[in-house]
Length: 338
Image 1 (tube, rainbow, N blue to C red):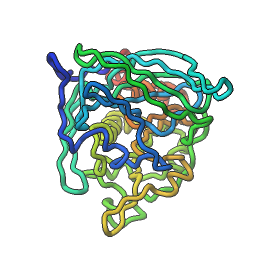
Image 2 (cartoon, one colour; image 1 turned 120 degrees about the horizontal axis):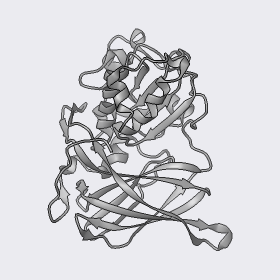
Image 3 (cartoon, rainbow, N blue to C red; image 1 turned 180 degrees about the horizontal axis):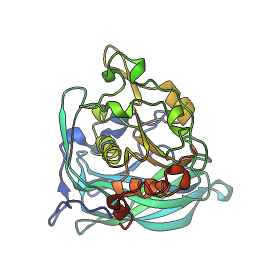
C-alpha cells in the first residue's frame, strides 16, 4: 500500500470534510451517469455507503464505494466486508451468492490543493480517504446486490444492501483493445490554454499532442479525462493531481495527455464533450487510461485510483523493448518494489 499520512479516527468515526466536499455530490459535480439514474446508496446507523462508477461490466472490475454520514460528510476508519449476489432472472429472481471479499481504503500519498472555476480553493488531506476498493469478477450481466457489513472505527455497521447493474460490455475501451485515435483540441488549436484546461495553474505540456498522435508514437501514454476545477468531491480533484505527479516523474518515458471532459459555454454551463461519449464511452469523470507503446489499452481506472495502482500499471510498459528499454533511472526502478 502506498505510504501516506493516515488520519486518526479515535473511538468514533471521523468527519473530515465540510458538506461542500461531500461524496454524494459526485454525480452532480463530476457528470454522473448517462441515463440520469440516481447513485446506488445504502444507509444505516448514520452511515451511507455509495456505490461509485457507472461502467461495471463482465469480468474483473474495480468496485468502488464511498462512505459518508447522513449529512454527506466523508467518514474515515471504515472496515467493509462485501458479499455479492446475482439476481437470477432464470430462477425467479433468486439471490445467488457469487463471491465475498473485503474493501480497502484508497490512500492519497500527498495533500492536494486546487482552485475550482468558481474561485473556491479546495484542500485535500494526505492519507486514508473514504473511498474503498474491492477487486471483483462478475460472471453475469444484469442486476446484482452487494451486502455490506463491517464497522466504522470499531462501531459495528448494520447489514446494508444495495443493488447495481453489470453490463455485458464496458462502455469505455476494453483492456487489450486499441485506444481510440481521438483528435482533441491542443494548444495550437486555441487562443488560450484556459479554453482546454481549467486547472489552476494549467499544464501546457499535457496539451501539445493529440491522443491519435500519442497512441501511435511508439511510447506508452497516460490519458486523463479529469477536471479538478469543476469537481466538488475529495476524489475527482486528486485524480488530476495524481496524474500530474506521474507526469512530473515519468514525462521523459511516456506521453501524458490531459483532456477536460466538459465544454463550458459563456454562462459557465458544463456539458460532457460529445466525442468523449461517442469514441471513449465516457459518461462521467474522472477516467484515467494507460496505453502501451503499441497503442493498446493496458489499464483503465474510473472515479478513483491510488498512485501505487497507476504506477503498477505504467512501470512494466517501460521495460518493453519498443518503449525505450532501460529508460528507468535507479529511483524509478525502486518503485517497483512497493
